[in-house]
Every structure is written in C-alpha cells, then in structure tokens.
Amino acid sequence: MSDHDLRDFIDDVAVIVKDTDDENEITRRIAARLSALLAGDYRIPAELTRPSPEHHLNYPLHIAADNSWCMVAVVWSPGQRTPVHSHETWGVAGIYAGAEHEFRYVKPAADGTGRPLTPAGEQVWRAGQVTVCCTTDDDVHAVESVGGEATVGIHVYGGNIGTIRRRSYDPATGAVDWFVSGWDQSPALAGASAPRQA
Image 1: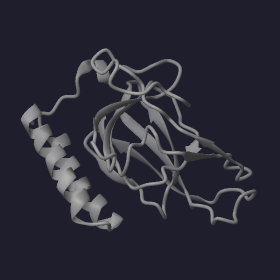
Image 2: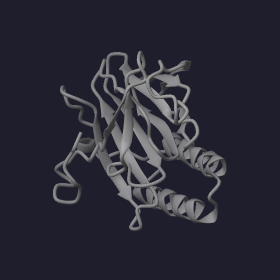
Image 3: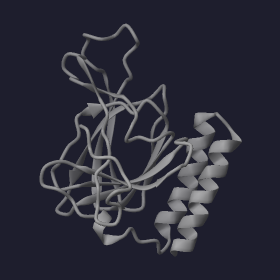
Image 4: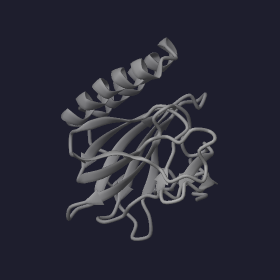
C-alpha cells in the first residue's frame, strides 16, 4: 500500500469512529482495515521504527483533530517489556515487524484495588497479525518484545493515547499508579508532538 492507501485507511477509520459508539463494532471493523494495511506495501518511515535502549517508544502517526482516535507506531528493543497497564479506551494493535508476547489480565472491579490480578491468558503476536488489545471492559495487559529484532506495532486507539490518564498495576498486589504516557518525538515530528511524560 502507498501513502495514498494510508490516507484511505485514516479516512476509513474516521468514518468508523463517527458511525457508532459500539466498541466491539469499532474494533472489529478497524481490525479488518489494519490487517489489509499490514498486508499491503505501506512502510512506516524509518525514523519511526528506531528503538531506544531505555524504554519502548510511542510515535504518533495520526491524531484526529478532535482527539477522538489516534494511530501510533510503538517500538520496542528486543527484550523490553511494558508494565502491566490499562488503556481506558478501545484499541486495535497490529504487528508491523518482529513479535510481541502479550500477557492479559482480568480487569479489576472498581473495588478490587489491593488484590492480586487474575491472569487471563497470553499469546505471541507476529508480523501481519492483528488483535483487539482493549475495550473499556477488557483493558489490562503487558507486552514484551521477543526474538532478535525490534518489535514495531501499529496501534489505533479511541482517543489521544498520549494524553489519556491510565493505570499501571502491580500484578502481585493490585496496587495502582496513574500515569500519562506522552509522546516520543522523532526528527520527522519534532515540534508536532508533546514530550514523553511517563
């Protein structure tokens, strides 16, 4: 797919998000479009696929003017792992390069703070595969880059994920810390995105 096809993808997602509030329908339809994007010839600019030795990076590919959704290139060095975290919105993730090991947890009830999290399965996702990573009722996981190369994902979220206040969990105790991920800058986007906050 060309950049023209990327524009078609962005236009299609904008229509989907405006069509319905049903998160299951939104994520199903976006997952189908993201699968097609990954199967085509679209290439993320090289500067948005470079990992950091310190932490995974979130590069904005598109943020809707009304902050109703965004498209992100998420990049991990081999072996990097996120904390267990929430998203507080819906999301669809596709693997552009490499592989990620996902560890899912049952979302705690509002009164569940202070209890260990319940594991809900794990899976390795590889290049070309797409998963619904979250809806607001099924929203807690951690991911790790596996294999010998950097993992690059294309994620689509319901909102501006760089500015959403989210939860980080200690899975052993259920303790919660709140964070805002912010955005990582790149040469192509310098001045166009907010600095990383957490």
